[in-house]
Amino acid sequence: MLDLTRIPEAVRSEGGVSRRLFLAYGTALAALSSLAERVAAADKKVTFAADPFSLGIASGDPDATGVVLWTKLAPKPLDPDGGMKPDPVPVAWEVAEDDAMKKVVARGTAGATPQLGHTVHVEVTGLKPDRWYFYRFTAGDAQSPVGRTRTLPAADAAPDKLKFAFASCQHYEQGLYTAYEQMAKDDLDLVFHLGDYIYEYAPADKRVRKHTGPARNKITTLADYRERYAQYRADPLLHGMHAKCPWFVTWDDHEFDNNYAGGVQEIQPKGVAKADPVEFLERRAAAYQAYYEMMPLRKRSLPTGPDMLLYRKAAFGRLAEFFVLDTRQYRTPQPNGDGIKPLVGEAIKPTNSLLGRRQRGWLDAGLITSAGTWNILAQQVMMGMVDYTAAGRNGFSMDQWPGAAHERMALVRFLADRKVPNPVVLTGDIHSNWVNDLRVDDRKADAPVVATEFVGTSIFSGGNGVDQPKGLDDLLAANPCVRFHNRERGYVRCTVTPENRTSDYVVCEDVTKSGGKVLTRGSFVVEAGRPGAKKA
Ligand SMILES: [Fe+2]
Image (cartoon, rainbow, N blue to C red):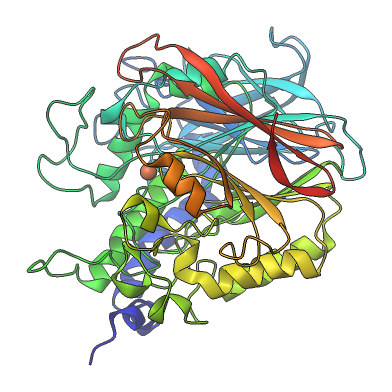
């Protein structure tokens, strides 16, 4: 019998898609390498029909001496070419110590090429550690607003505080970015976005807002994905938050296709054929390229065909090490037919993985060499082994870590055996808030707690939710690992010190109207050296 899970690997190395994609991406990479000459020859007096910085500016992936600065030239953001001619355009950038841009400490010129949708990714180097900076871009006769960014503390520094937020899941049609309006006032050092930055679905009626793009189908082409990101990013509340501080981003499934696993499409309804595996990988290449283009990522993340390196780590001095994971690209298909299923059979196969062997090895090596007081995994799907039987469903989520139960338990055992200091897991994906104590096997409530998981709700995917979902008491009674659960919308604001870390669950009472009231629904603290969350 044909094993679909094996096909993507095969086509990647056998020609077909690989050859076509190689040629396509070869062109983009060649353009990058010869950019300097081409940009120098370009018309420096370029003019624009409208503001080319309509999608804002952003920064991301900071280290102790640098950061990535991002923009995209798009005078007409929803046009297929963003309103740009198919020529490279030089974009000048400046970094200053002051918001008036008087004390400039670094400047240069980057190229915005049509191959990468006229996006700009500048990797600034030579900055001082643990400093705030300001930046802006100039292209032709247009100048961007000034953004604020920062470097991380030096590797051997001992910072006394870090303040960051994490967010996920922002289905444009289902709400407004009110949460980011509040986040912009929080005076954060960093933001982590844990995925579902866009949704690939066709436009639907009777929603808060409406997607552009193909009328009845999911988006599939590079032009589609570019347009979708442009629609989301054009919102000033979203790009306004990007301009406030650097972001570390990672994706989940909807940046490409719901519940995909590596190169395998989700299980289709009866009578619907699965996508051709080659075409599916071509779509993945388009989705990944659009993601790279639109995010403040380093060049190491530039996609190669349908592959893109997104997992990486960052150290905030010796206070915290962050491991930003990718649990989509390398995973094995969801066992037991996906959905909520008992933790038996396929679900406990030792070969199931969300990380893939190489990422897992990288993570293990990073965890045992970490100098961080706190070791924080920024990732997508819930690690807490929550049994939904008490909530009227039959078992555990096969799309989340219980679907790779062996790998999940081995990872938590590794954290315990190697005495990784203060492990914390940050999660998105399920549009609800959870605080979970993590044990090697969460079904064994008497076992010692090893780590603590904070699951953040959606920015607004799913529309307005509720504080106390039906059956909450039964769910909590059946799952002692769960310390808090709530289904409102918002984000999680975290304060980390050498002594403890606090998570504030910030919720927005109405995401369908602008100016929705924002409040903190609950705060939970973990003390250093004592895994497990307590109400603050
Ligand atoms: Fe989502």
